[in-house]
Length: 595
Ligand code: BDP
Image (cartoon, rainbow, N blue to C red):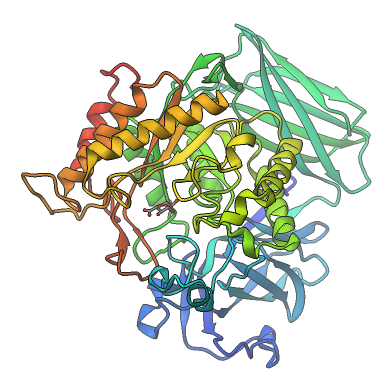
């Protein structure tokens, strides 16, 4: 389903603000029919995680189920329309009841769930929405879960976190993105795929494929408007199912230097009457990997940026619009041009901002540190379904230039991963993703534990590596760290002859810790490590970028390695710069060869 918009044919109503809330650790809500509503004096803000909002009620580390309820008045003009409820994301799974009737469920966090509620609502009256959300994970879910027993059985008790996770960010629970009730016409444009290519130096091609829901339509038209609202290309056709092709003359191509957006307007007709209209911003651009270079519109681009997280005090993983503005301002201030949505799809608002600001995005699926010893065919299927939904949601963003379909598989270093099972798994995931999108490179960042024989390299268009030499390995020893980094990059390039991207490197630093000699955890050590890594990466002609881990400090599960937060941010969790931020700003200012 397309992102909800408001125009002459569609309307929307945000159902955010405060909802009634109740934790359900014993999972008795469904038996006790809480979906007909429940007693509670606790309120929670939507969007937002429950963990820090309701810490005082003991929910900081809560993993389990919780219930949300809200009454909304649905205005009369929603009648004669199809009515939908969209939860931008509820992590990690959810179920929805409208006026006591089950309306839908979702097994996937970090992505919207759109359910049709036309049959369950009363128009011109009050309606009850009840949602139950769970942040529990399992062997089959994406991301994959872990239990304390796994650590005990595998004799890895010192790796156990609380709550137990296979990843290094807090498994916050809650409704994290806006809840929207919206209407569409009975026959409407359900999906759109916009492909853009460059015909020659002055012409751009826009190909549009539309998915229509309903029967009442006969033709379809598309127009592209420039920023002054003048139409620069248009087409009309009776073949609604066909792909439409438009050519823009004197085309202004989208790039990180000039993120020019056209407005694409699509109209659906029944005879000569317009049935539906949808409009979205598009950027005409082309991404390619050629001769170990990443090309944007035929020009080499070097990625300078970060791995990020959706994470902020109190809001947790909840969408917080001022933070989006701030983070993009900081990314511009520091002279970066890219980030990876580690380790899950971010809110659409983030991508819309990236489109406008000309920031390049590697969009990632939350298959973080998959342990294939526990991965059944159900997990593989969930992984594919997740990718499909992510590609469907984010396909039309010019800022999204690469798909990352996982992160650091086999971080446990299991030998069985190399006997063909790892290869088979990733072959299937990469082939599946390519069948959905031929226009973008695909990758999976590898970790040092999985090593240089990781099968993800065989299928990746870009050899992405996350390296912590000088931190987890060879702590405090930058000389050895750079030797190992060089060895890994050279070995991989020699073996695969594909471009190398360092998707993660960094060091923790506690803002305010200083020393005159190199000392881990100080701002100076973090700064030096980042600077040396960048020098090394940029000295290799086959590298296409460097992404520092992390943009900002972020909250993690409890572990003796973490002082509440992962402190690898170059900004603190509340976005104050550390010493490394000033160094990066200088390095990325363009004075050096590759930067
Ligand atoms: C990498 C992971 C990332 C962690 C980082 C770290 O991809 O999620 O936060 O290490 O340990 O292995 O800081």
